[in-house]
Image (cartoon, rainbow, N blue to C red):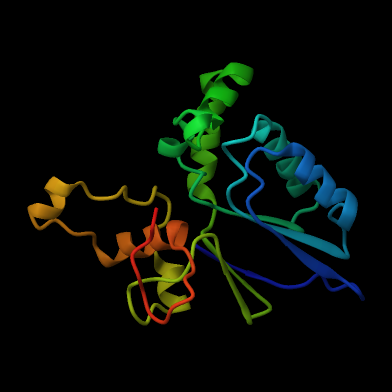
Length: 199
């Protein structure tokens, strides 16, 4: 669930953290053009949400995964909330579109492989033992430690929001489910403490 990352050992090296590219291949190409491709001096961490919304998420994935194979240890990917089948199967106009794109271009077998890949992606990274990286945000569950995150059974999708009927019946998430959900969906707020999201 958690990947420890170090800067490349070469002098002047850097690790570039990339946020939500959402199927925008041109943006991914621009990032590689501006900062340079992965190398012994340059590592990348993609912090999720490569999928959905844009029309070229499959190509962005292929490019990033190709660099990952070519430069092992220099390209890392965390799972975002859009590396999830339920969101992928929404229409692009509703924030999804990856299923439609992938099925049209490559068929169901490749789409299924992407879904398997998404569940293998870690959720957290710690850079140089100092910087914690997660796609969503921090957790409503108090005192979550890095040790606990390392033990989290993460090879599953985050839980979907409980329906009003489930809430009325008293159903709640386990702490593990809360952590999984918050790791993918929590948004920062400019207030102290925890508040309900507007989404």
